[in-house]
Amino acid sequence: MRKFHQLLITILAFTLIMLTPTCFANKPKLLFVQTAQSGTVTKMSNYPNKYKLQLNNVTGYVTYFSDRPNRITGLMTTNDFVTYWNKGASSFAKDNPNAGLESVTINSLKKTKNVSFVFEISNPIYNHKNRTITYTAKPLNKNIRITKPIKLGYTSIFIDDVSGMIIGACENCGEW
Image (cartoon, rainbow, N blue to C red; front, top):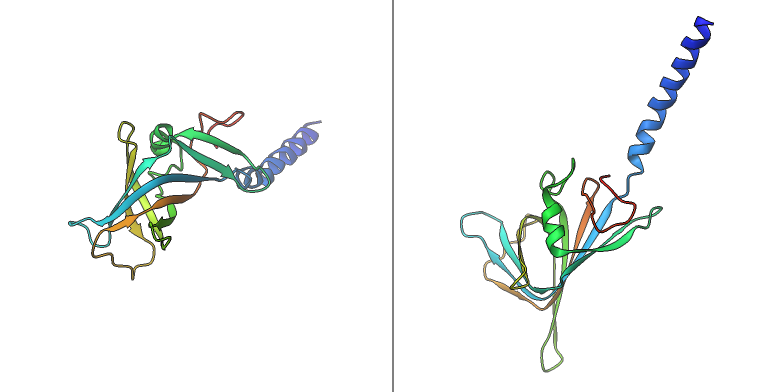
């Protein structure tokens, strides 16, 4: 009987060890989309290759979604998004996210100007009253040098995954 119990405990322990990586590997990764009517990218004078990314007239919500197979979607307030930046075991504050920026300006002559960058972003500051959000942005392409301010038109930023953020606006979600 004792050998049977030892065998049973060994099988259970082995099963738990084998299943643990699968459980963690299947955590949903959330991606975020933030939009604004305008913005600017300006050089930060005391930091080489770091910029201030300011988005103006941001929407009050950030859209999030996950990849297959989970297909989680939702909205969270911009204020909650910034608040949750520092929360969770693998938060954005511990591992700054990448963000793809796409902007288009259409002038009165129907001419368009497109701007595209990929940054590592950090230090979000949200001003609810003025509807602005500011990030520290570091281009992933080390050859990019922005010497004069860039005005942005309608802008969307696509912020890469995080699995440690607590989503308060999502049903059946918690800290992943």
